[in-house]
Image 1 (cartoon, rainbow over the protein chains, first blue to last red):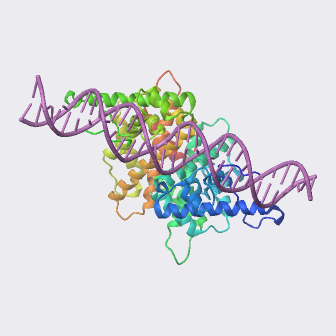
Image 2 (tube, rainbow over the protein chains, first blue to last red):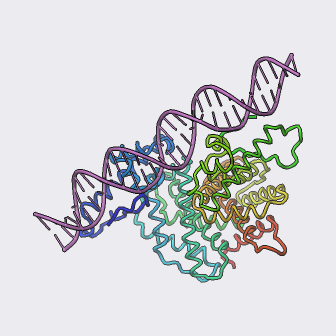
Image 3 (cartoon, chains in turn yellow, cyan, red, blue):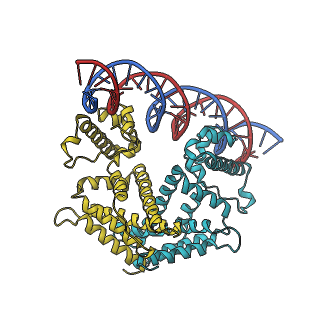
Length: 219
Length: 219
DNA sequence: GAAATACTGGCACTGTGTGCCACAATCTAC
DNA sequence: GTAGATTGTGGCACACAGTGCCAGTATTTC
């Protein structure tokens, strides 16, 4: 298993993977990646992503600059290390659709499947990421570009399932799906602290309903 | 009037500006900017934005690297030079809204005002830009980030007009508005060549209607 | 245990982005 | 019309991002 350099490969095997799949190297890769991610996150929070150099992140993570780039494309990628999970999850789940009429619902169903698989996301960490996305221009640009990539995947999958439909239309549907997906997370992280917590699935459901209201002109 | 360095200042005075506002400097600035833009556009088209260096763009435009950065933030900015126009136009037109129920329609009305002002956009040039946005990852990322900026402006304007509404919701509305705006251009540039041409306003109207269908589950 | 494989850091290099300065061109005020 | 003020330009040096390459080290494989 080679470290695929700078391609932001997800090492999401911290969830009870088989012991035979976890060697010294595997574990070391995972820990190093996490260490770099945390260093990037903390420095971006305290000083802003643009003001932090890769050298500083690498030093804080106790790796060289050269190694930093083996794990991540750039600083923003290191900060948003968990985002890759969703990019991959969206491709792994079945998408069942037969016409544009139910395409948005089909994408939302994929989102539900991803959420169902994600046992209990870390609210505090999501809050930190969302705060950065909202307040740091560099992080936001990178996040928005990643959302674009996710939308492209969905569009292409829709095109396979519904050949002959105009791509523009499929892209519009995918955009809507990704917009509500993103807003689901924004809503979930924005809920008041303490008390009864809304689940990510509930947050996403609420956003979907709201989207339909707003488009229909209801309030 | 100082050249505001690298801030992608629009010099959109080529449309019958008063002669007293056009000195040698003003004209030279405008021509230089356009020359850099065209050089960037052509090189990005032929070789891909990432493969082109700023030095090459500058050389093709007969300016120094240092001067390039006085006009544009980076290569992508130079390619998408005309995009700034919409960012500014969105802020200049009145936004009339009283409740979230009609917020999307209000944003669309701003779009209509911008379109009405833009006498006859250059279809060929828009086509070139859209092709690059669709096919060149660097250009696309930059364009998507710019769309995000436009959405932020709209969200903030909505917030001023409707104090007390949740920002998340206003942002969702702004996102929808910008998504349909962008798709209006995609549709307009994607129409078959020759024959009766659909106007940008018609393209935007069609996309808005289609969005409502798709969200409602109609086809 | 030896050989193969993979990870690491250092280095040199190209390219990006910017502050600074001297010089040239244009503008402004008298 | 001219001197002084203002603005645009290019060159330069520098910090930083990003990457190919290589030698050394650690782990895996047979």
